[in-house]
Amino acid sequence: MATRPRPRGHPEACRGYTAQRRPALRFAPAEYLTARLLLPAPLQPDVIALVAFMHETGDRFDRGRRLEREEALQR
Figure (cartoon, rainbow, N blue to C red):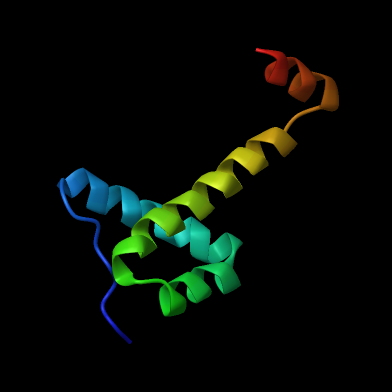
């Protein structure tokens, strides 16, 4: 298997990508693997981080009781 693409720049960006890659793979394995196979390597870290972000925000909207979620959305 090819080496993982690494974001350019600060070491924090590399650590952040690595931290988001695992949840993205668990939550959306087909999308993760599709991105790895079809996207150019420089785009992969951003797309994979976006998938992880979408999962996390969607998960937060689904937690708690309905009234609490509605109140949180009003803020």
